[in-house]
Length: 528
Image (cartoon, rainbow, N blue to C red; front, side):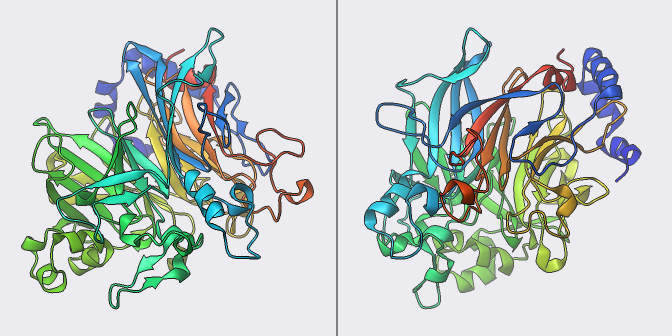
């Protein structure tokens, strides 16, 4: 899509009506001279000119007298205590999975001990942190604050559902926490993505558990039912209380993006981050409910949302004993009713200016789609409860656009789109990804002379990906996770580590959350 087509596609009238003249003038003037960065293979977090970062917190740092920050931080969300003060509030951070080499000193020579598995369980889930800008204008974690807590793979979490799941109403922990969302009432939705790498997956034909899908092998020491994972989990960041929402279905959830309707009902969009899996939408029956409503799967070829309610589908009535089974075996049910398999649907964001739904499709190498794309869903009449839609390609990855494998997305206060890339470490620096080098952070300006262009803003350290971009309410800070630097290290010996970020020298690599700021960030949004 060229720049002219992109502007027309956005709708000039919508953009002009939504942005103030000040923002338009500031953006236009700034973007005439602004240049991003070139791809980099350096072991550093490289930023465009006029941007700086501070490491807010990294793996292993204490957050209170007994807890430490978890591993492989992903989604972040900042919730200010007072809307009038954007510099003091709660930061939620997902912890997706662990590298046993670093976390439990497991090298694969023997079976993991129970203690090693417990250590790994503790390092996933999420962290709740009170953060605040200090007198020097730098963000810091308020140590030992009563709000600072960990939710982990050991936390007992009930199911929000009237029927037991695999015989129980409470699960042990949350894991695979990738991206997420925020509810209108200020709680966090953290999403359990690749759940099968922890406890395997059930073979529903004979009831056995397929251990081959369990990379971490936790079921050998803790035989928890696989059905207890793969859900959207709601966490109250002020109390740490959590619940798993069965009504949203079970799959490798990348995110849960919430749209509140004028009548208080909710629409929740979520993607199943695996090749040839589907895009889902939940529409609540009641205001503020994440348990009462219907779940739908997208048939992109027909432009229709297909009901996954058992009572609506004779095929589901024939193959599944009840709605609980439909939701547990969501992937199967979705295909039976006509859900379209997509190219790894990951993050989802709703355009703040026109309400369109953007879906990052990372890639599908089995179908020779190496670079991925961003899909646009235009709901009929702009109604998020509509059961028909128009699908369009928003941006295509590739050498022409300068990015590959789009992942997490965020809109800034001026309506510009930001997104990260997720080139797998096993494929990075190899064809066809050679020229993209390390993973990055990219910007698509909304207005001005470079509207519609893809500009690289940051480059990640070695082996890492940048995840969870989230803007502070005033737009002056971008919180960003640097996940799994040094993931392909052969050992913890300094000479065999592929990264030493963020501490440098001979130190172990550590995933971390950074706070990005600077004149360039403000100018991009017309704030300076």
